Length: 385
Image (cartoon, rainbow, N blue to C red):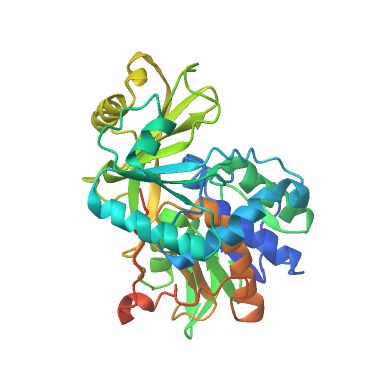
């Protein structure tokens, strides 16, 4: 085991995609004394490792589209830059509208995405049905499709960043649970863990669903709520074509995508209570299964291969929080509301820019600060499932 360091230039709390990306990008800029803390026994086994692995350009706000426009190409270059294969499968995302409100929103979204240079197509109900012969979408009135969207292996991204960061001298520790944060004179001073205490004047809170608890240790309240989301996978289904897209039944927050030879299926429980429970709710899984069979009768003859639950970290406007707090040196990169994994690569780079240059250069995310909540500058994201 690495000796626990007494001091660091920067401590990063959370070894998922945000923390790993930030550690890598800071080290790449020449910061030597970085400590990355992960409370689990392996990196990326918190929220990142339990996500569906989807990556997409299709969002309803310009800022999220711009984040995707920077982040997804970083994932495409990942093997060339970091040396790690990440299994980027471009099946495309196909979002299906079954009511007029969503249809209108989709039209606006496609126009905005096209204006920014993202090649999303608007589909009629008939086109949706033609593209999804295995599914029952009699009620589909519109859809949107982007062939560049798809899935990526979350663990490969996290470990690629962690391994590359360690080669550049980053101290990356697992089994390191944060127990307290020392603040004095309005500045962060140290982080206490079960392994020891490390002094640092810059602490980045990238703890995802647990970031609210970490912020409280520094005496700060942040509007990040942990919310359980669960999914299951099926055994191989030879009927499902290799190019089957990531399908989202938008009104029902029900989704399907290829996972190996079978499918991964998930659905949002609109009655889910906030909390840290990551056990599968078997009753809701049946609701999910019934909805899935209704859309794709083939599922009826499938058997379940695995199932799990993970946590979203939800903010009031479904957008992340980047940057400073009222405590000097205590910074945030959290609140991604279920689409953090795909924006992890650029978010780590953005935090390295903010820490070292005092501003965000790659994408201007300055409006996504903590103060927007008290100042009423919320930016609502429609495309969250």
